[in-house]
Length: 199
Image 1: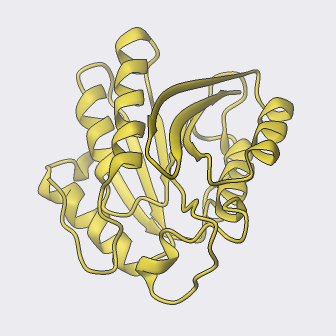
Image 2 (image 1 turned 120 degrees about the vertical axis):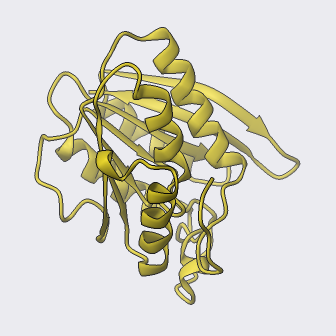
């Protein structure tokens, strides 16, 4: 249950792929999560779903971040609506610029990846990934590398065949101990996958 407004991206297939992937991973893993950070939280749907899954295993703390004031309001209202405010904070911030290094054990993002440049409304910015669909993805991923606790961190994210995947895979190969591709969903115009980078 989330609270939306007209300037916030509505949970969709890419959102659900991330949540389902996380649920699969937690089912198979004994890893506990202490600090979860979501970049580009939008409605808060992903973090809310994750917290509901892991609260029985651990006592996590989540930070939801979005650059949009409309999205941060939606995330916070959704968190409270689900009674998860004791475990969460919401910050309006440009990426991870407001977070210190080496603090997170899990970072998740479902960034704008459409190969368009639209800096109009907040809603338009929520799907605009730049000319090659990589601008926001690269920013989020590079910032995540610096915020990950050494040796224990996992970064979970989406990738689309509409993006410059060669650029993404080259960076993943250089930056991750292991890269795994999990759930994918194909449409007539693209395939979206959830992937993970172990640090």
